[in-house]
Length: 536
Image (cartoon, rainbow, N blue to C red; front, side, top):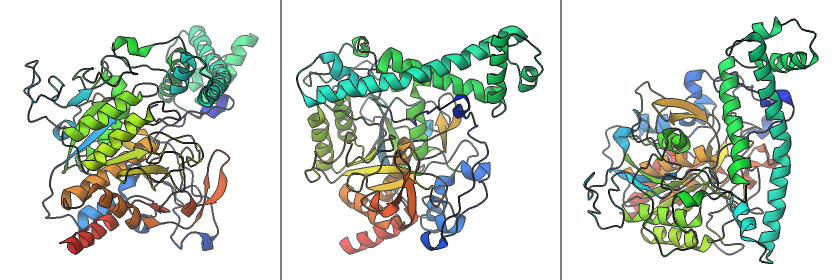
């Protein structure tokens, strides 16, 4: 399933509807002895800083960024890097975006538009990558597919049934609340005969009609915390979330694969899909476009945010992640496609709890390792310990040792250093999460030359993929597994107590990942230089 930040509601006002650029909470006070002696930032970030906080420095700016600006200023000036292909396996990418189009990979062995497989790789006119989903977009969750297949007597089937019913039960009150809010909005629109009414308009209503009065109360509360535009935007997003779950993700009768005409259970057929890496609609490529922008947006052009590795990367677009759970077959082939076409870093901002053909994906990751390709993967957004509740794909099969040394799994940070530094949605795990990176309120490109904030471990992962690309560009003799170790060992060590998990329990930051660190590009480049000198 595409790893998007989940929306939680508890009561009418829990929808919050605070704009992405709205007021930020100050850091809560903590015991000074428990904050590594680093200062807490107690004032809100200015918009210009919030839009690029992941590039700031913890010591200088008191924000837990990756010290990207410091690295560019002090370490990279005047140096000539190699070009690195970074494959973004995602929902599609708007390759025509003003802030991305100059960084999109072009297949040098393929002639555009001649409808021939010039490079004989099995994919016709794959100029900028490949779309393994074709014109399909919506899909079921993997647990829904397992239930649909029927009872095979397995523990997996029993677990899937239980989880599916739990998800449906949790969704019902959310649908009721959504319908109540939409109904109130429609009632006010009809009464005022105005589609764009304001808070003042609502407050001015005088009525003895009980139903209209209730609608007035609901919309007064909501519009007191948001503008009309913010309400419309977030309600549209939430409506899509709820009804996509009902109509597609949790619907055992739905079949999204029929549009593609491929059997996801048959790994022998591999040449399906098309070369439209944007997807059937640009709007459906929002997630992938945002992820690609975190890596490759043009720096310092006064548009959107800044990419971590703008000058060194070419983004290969590989569409394999639908609105629902990805198929193991598509992911395995997407990884192999990226490897075979020259990618040295692959970003995977996706994941799921069930993986019926995980061996296909495991084999693809091992294939990537054999070809010296680093796979950077998002840890997931369920606020869970993934040592106990697996998130696929991963680099360990159950309790076994890691089967590959080229997987870097990333948790998400908040921009508030201190007790709240772990993003409230982020998964964690002493064994299965390697490191943390910025993932809350990340500003990046979205389709049709727009920009927006998004959050999730989906955003933390490309931040790290960008760091990996820079290391590989400036120190090309380093192997994928060495780049992984450098990123983990050079991160800023954090020893404070933090809030994490569904229950928001106090935990030691050092116990939430294998490294106990947050990514730091400046330190990573210094260590890469040192390790390269030793090798030479």
